[in-house]
Image 1 (spheres, rainbow, N blue to C red):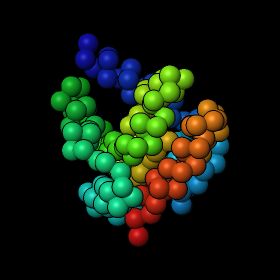
Image 2 (cartoon, rainbow, N blue to C red):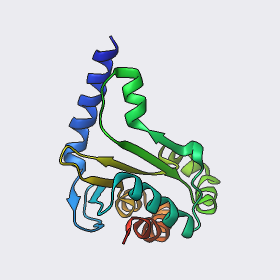
Image 3 (cartoon, rainbow, N blue to C red):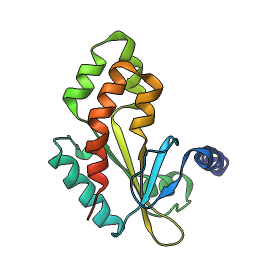
Image 4 (cartoon, rainbow, N blue to C red):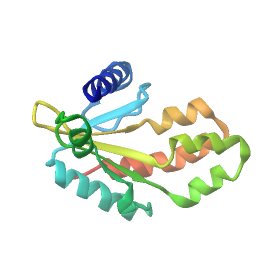
Length: 161
């Protein structure tokens, strides 16, 4: 049963990621929901650099907001997906200013911001995150204003050199 569940989840993720994800040499806004870039660093170095960059931009990165997908999937499904972690982070003032309005409370489903770091079968480390520019265009108003302010900060977090 647990293998059926794991395969179903993985199939859904693979199916959904196809039309949304794209690879780029640098952070590019494009029209895709997810941005994916190749890291020039190892898996652990990439995670460390992103966290350092996030803190330097004034974002909060609580330890409890780090999820080890490889470990969790292996424990539950006995399937090793390879190194894969997500870092959830928040710019608390921006989040609070958005969430104070009733019409924006639904955005809690998309918070906190998440950056994924993983290793593909080619042995290279990749980073992915939501395309904040596109999210801002989709929602408009306060969300567009917030994403136009925070988008450059998140892009700066991904400039690892």
